[in-house]
Image (cartoon, rainbow, N blue to C red; front, side, top):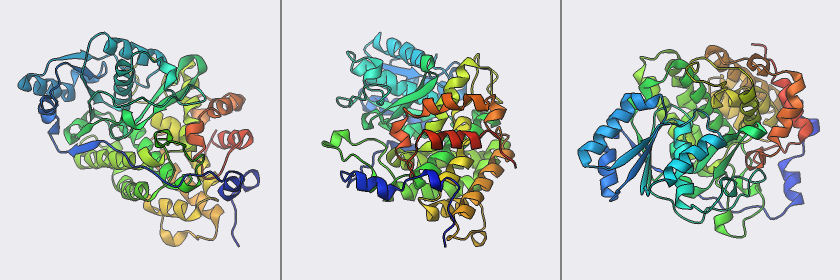
Length: 455
């Protein structure tokens, strides 16, 4: 007899949901950047731009990275190949609507014909937005933003060529068509998701992964971990509705599928082997290089399958903190409060996967094993036990890497739960991919159970 998770009474099954709507999808589409891996491969960026016949390039980075070797090496390659360029270095860590608009305005000020992003996910997402709105100049910011927050219009066509040069071991933004930002007035995150935003090329240079402090590696790595777990456990693409009336309307995040599964199953064992090493020893080049690979592989997984509740619930967590004072370790150099994206995502993960285990117990069990749980210690017929073992292994990683053990450690209280729920409800792009459907009551229970964890 199967033992169900404590959330079972609140849930309806995916099968019941499908019976209510027979217009589910029957196809999925895989899209990723061209990826080039190699130590020192940043040196090739100038030749790539000349091969594309780029005449006026906009390099986008941030105030910290602009002074570090990844940008210097990029500019050296530009000079060697005669690339004409300008630099925008005001990207905000965890971008906002205002910071997106600042970059967009800069991009519109000149006729740039190619974009290069050197930095982490914030920089790459900002470059995607600058490329999009400087290409299609007559559109307003919220025209392409995901519904219901924005209008959710499809991007009309291709953008200008873009190269991403990631410098963090996380986000996977170099592989996806997604750009995420905070709306400060609404205290929540949202995003733009369309395949046309995907960079044409990503130069994954292991030299560039060596300039992150350990706290940044920890946060970025938990983003990778949750990308993988959420993709692997998401609603199947065949259960997602509605079926698009036109292929261009098929969302970037389509649900679990055989190709995404492969990349998730590659990334999880890499995380188990290298994550803690990478985030605790800044001299461990191998571990940081391997986490950079894991980020890309997870990106190819979630870039087509999508994510679900951990990400959907993270958006109001980070958004509400804009008006507070919490700053995660190694981000003290910023002049604003910040719960980094990976921290805001993983802080609810132990509770989320206890909830979703009912829908896909075998995948939750596989995930726990790939993260280090002994497979002989988990019974496939006991879903409650599977959920607890996955919860425990996540808490082990969080504790080992000094992640706040619950929302209370980030400055939240039970009185914040209603605002957190209200900030999650609009995130339908991702929450609808939960393998167990959710409602406000379930979300409130998940936030409540994420307030404090016992080790």
